[in-house]
Length: 336
Length: 289
Image 1 (spheres, helix red, strand yellow):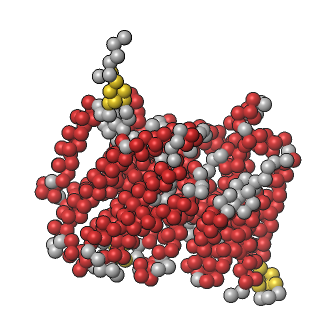
Image 2: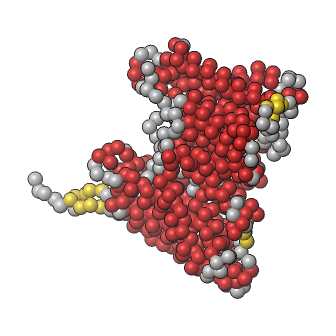
Image 3: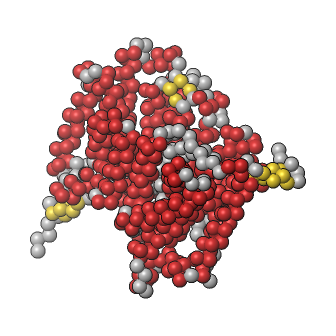
């Protein structure tokens, strides 16, 4: 038998084609300020930070098995860290953005040590309690504006750019840069040794532990990294909103429920799923938001039906049906 | 600061929290299901009581005769028709399905009743109190709620350890596969367990509606209180849940004595301290005899 060499294939033809496609989309979005209106920029910016949050939640729940419903804690903490640094500490907004993520990582470490004592669904509710505790804690701190929150003063905002149009453009690019950073970071992480360990943990924690994966450390690192980027996203979100209050910063509905909806609809445990889910969510919202509570009831129903009947979500179905992987993280053995 | 008052009022509040927690504890104990919509079912029961008062002209407590069977039927149907399909090794489906149900209930109530703050009235007994030595006044109604919590847990203990149904519940909890081999119909048994959990949820909801005000968004924080009581007390122990509820109530009463804004935060802090010092809770389940 002719021993053909076996090659580890890490990309697919679809992934090479889609890489070009995503490059084109990215260039189009990056130049949006020159050909689109402020409304378009706001919508794309919002889609970007939702995609970043969705991808981070997907990393936690879809790969590390850490189903958190408390990620709003890190959105709020990132936003408060940023507002505190540029306000009372009078730091440059750019420096503050760079520090917000690491600052949240620092806080998330002891949080992880506490909530990791709970398993499964209890972990989920535990992270929620922690977030509530942070929200109520912030309302007790006068330096953080207590219950009424904080605002970015015109003087701070002018440091980004003197005029309104320039500011909107720069904040738009920052938001876009954050989602690219998150996406590329998660993709690179999942393709690395660390990603292999994560996938193993997702499939079976006891089995991966017995094969030498340090499951506790892998999950801890993932949790802290996701918290750091969630914090950065929070800082950017509230930079564009100018105003921050405890209820808005630590809102479970805005920063976690909606995000979970996107990931589940799109397909959990795939990198493409959060993109699809985010797009579906935004389209549904634009079409149905005037229905108010009925629209939210419909979202709830869709989530229930998807979880009961289509657990793989939209992209999960497509990937299985057509064996299509735009962002392959698997290693495939082929005869070269 | 009146320590005796904090202990007494906190314990009585803890009785209500224990009652919140019973349903959550049952569904986790028997089918390993954490019902994220649990708090919303408490609030749904409160609204059901409100409807019964308005439509049928019932006395606030008499609404239990209607609300309990209704919620039990909803519980049975929900478990049999929906939640049984989510059970398995993957924790996401039950979590997200109950999350979806929570969104549906909250917005359904908002659609039906608006965001107004509601309350059930049960006449003069709401404001009656007994004066204790040391300047502590004990509300009659909170005392009744506490007594109901103790009696409920006592009744459940008898159900679990003295009846055939209870043995089936414990068998399914310990080893569902073997229990099925022994002729237990798991789908029916789980649905019964959820119906029983809903009986106590309905009881908790109506008593809560008489004790404090509520609105369609009151559910999630009740889920959190129930959850904290269960974890503080220790998983799988009903008397532990009562103790957990009482500890949570005392922590909140202590926080409120410091400043009204500290009430709930103090409860969260107590929960986190217990989690750090005794991760399996104060009274985790002992081996069954």
